[in-house]
Length: 467
Image (tube, rainbow, N blue to C red; front, side, top):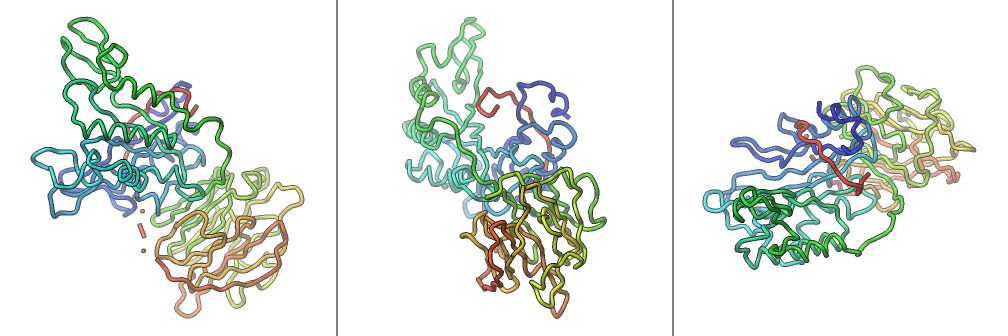
C-alpha cells in the first residue's frame, strides 16, 4: 500500500483516504448503514489498516460525503459533508491521528451539485448565501468538528480544497463568496489547501484557477505574484492573518466506541490477545478510559478527563472479568455485576448478541491508586448522564449512562430477568476523590441513530502546519 511505500519519508505526514465520496449512477454512499457503500466503515477499516500494518504515525484524513441523491427538483439530494460525524464519529488506534476534511466552491451548494443545465436544480449555491448564512451552513455541515469542544467528534478539520479563477470574467457573487469564505477561514483559524496550486497556460490562456501558472508557449511563469491576478492581495491577507496565534493548550479528549457491526477495540494494550473469544469487543484508546455506555446499542464513550492519559500501567496485564468474583458491595441488587478488581478501571467491554459478556480492566499506575467508594448510575429507564452530557450524543435514540469527569467506570451491571436480554442497565462510578456512595435513577426521553465503508486513495506532502 502507498502508506507503507512512503513510511520512511518524513515529508509524507498524512493520507487522504478518498477524494470526494459521492453517488455513482445508481447508488449513494452512506454514513453508518453497515452495507457495501458505507463510507464511515470503509474509512475506519482503511485507517486501522494503515496504522496497524504500515505507519502508526501517519495522520489519517477522512473527507465527508460529497454528494447523495439525484440532482432533480422534487427529489431528495444534497451534500451531507461531515454531518454524520455528529452522531457517529471515528476513533482511530492513535487517538491524536484523525483529521476530518471538506471541500467548498462557490458554484456548488449545500443542496446544489454545481451543474449547469442537466443536473441543475433551483437550490441556492454557496455564492448565493450571505456571509452569515454561509458561515452557518459551513459550520453545520463540516467545521463543527473543530469549533465545538468536548464532543466525541471534536477533531481538527482541514479545508483541503477551495478556489476560484484568478483571471477572466469573474462574477460579483463569486468574488463576494471568496471574500466571505476567506473571512470565515481567518476568523476561525482554519487549516486549508488551495486548489489547484499549479496550472498551465498557452499564450496567456487556459485554466485560471491555479495560484502558480507556467505558460508553455511563452516559457514564463504567470501566477499570483506576476501582476495580473486579482486574488493576490486577498491571498496575502489570508496567509498573514493574525486572528489567532500562539500555541493551543491541551484539551480534554473524547471518543466513541461503535460495535454496531463488528469489533471496535482501539487499544494497543489490549490488542496483544483476544480477551473474550467469540464476543464482540470494544475498547478505548490506551490514553483514555470508559466513562459511559448505551443500553441496547452497546456504544461506549471514552475520555481522558481529569486524569489525562496517565492512568494505564501498560506493564501490568489486563484482567478480563466475566463473573462477580471482584464485586466489593452490592451496588446493583438482583443484577449481575461485572466489576474490576481494586485499582483497576474499565477500558473495554464485550457482548454476545445483546448480552454483556465481560469487561476488560486495566491497572492504574497512578500513585495512591484509585478511589474505593462509588455510586450506581442506572440508565435502564432513561438517560442518566453527568456533567451536562459532555462528550455529545454517542448513541442516538438509546438510553445512556455516564459517570462524572472526575470518575471512572469500575463495573457494569445487567440482567436476563423479565424482558431483559442482558443489556447493560447500570454502571458503577468511582472517583479518586472518594465520592460518597449513592444510587441514582433518572428517566429521560430518548432520542433517533446511524453507522459505514471504502478505500485508500492518496498520500500527500504537507509543510510544517501539522508536523
